Figure 1 (cartoon, rainbow, N blue to C red):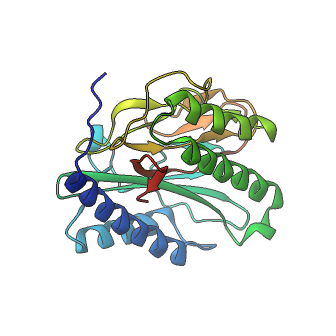
Figure 2 (cartoon, rainbow, N blue to C red):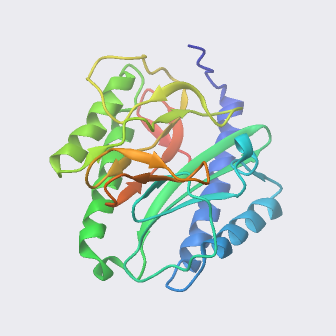
Length: 249
C-alpha cells in the first residue's frame, strides 16, 4: 500500500479545492427543485468549476461522460446526469469532484426534493447516512485505524435498520482521485491501516435502505439496488490531524 502523506503546502491546495467544491455544492442546492433536470444541474456545476480555473474531476475519468454523478432513489453510485426532471419526494444524491493546482477534492450530499416533509421516510434515511458520515469523520484522527472509521459508520447504519453496500468505499485522495487506502464503510475497531497526520481521505458512506445487493445498468456506469429500494450517499474529504479530521468539503 502506497499512502501519500501530504505536506502542509499540499494540504493548503486541497483546502482551497475543498472551498471551491463547497461553493459548487451551495450553488447546486439553490437550483435543485421540482422540475429541474439532471443535465441542467450538471451544466451549472461544470460552468462554475471551469470559471474558477479548475477542472471537473469526474468528467473523462475512465470514460465517465459528465461532471456530476447524480443518483435518484434506487440509484446507488455513478449515475449519469440525463434529461430526467426531479419530482417532489425524490431522494437525490449528488457527488462531485474538482481538480485544481494538481490536487482533487471530492464530496457528496443528498436532498429530498420539495423538502423533508415531502417524503419523511426518505428524509429519515438521508439523516441517518449523514449521521454515519459524521461518526466516521469523528473516528478519523491520528492514532486510530481505518477499521475505527468503518465501525463507526456501520454502527449507525445497522442501528437504524439499513445496510452498507460493501463493494463501494471511501478512499485516499490527492494528486489522484482515488489513492490508497480504501476507507471501508464497515469494519472492526483497532484494525486496518493506521491513520497518521497528513493523510487525506474521502469518507463516503454508500448505504441501501433495504438489501445491499446491487447491479450495474446497461450504460456501464449507473449502479442500482437489486430490490429497487432507495440508496443514499454522503461524503466528506479532508485531512487527518492529531486533533481530529479537518473537513475540506
